[in-house]
Length: 124
Image 1: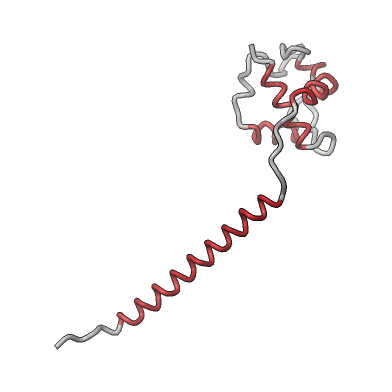
Image 2: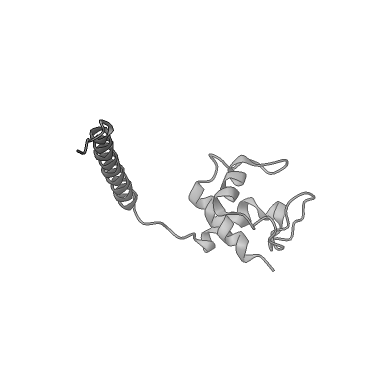
């Protein structure tokens, strides 16, 4: 004679709840992807615009060709400072440091990413 343990029904109920939770997670992920797609296409950085912004805001300290003219300013032509993800550089540009002003509220994120893209072209 075979008896079913009481936990068997509980186990099935847990399985159904787990499956329902996975469906909800799937729907949430799908909604997130739809929201990202609706936000518009990702835009590539504009190196030419970045060059103009760099000339106006950055060249006085970092030099027109990326060779720093101010003590303590990173030499962008060597590219050492630029070996970070764009997001890390964006945060640094927005916050400023030492003699470098904070560009939060002065330049948009898009403008700053354009400058980062241009700065990467200065690497020798």
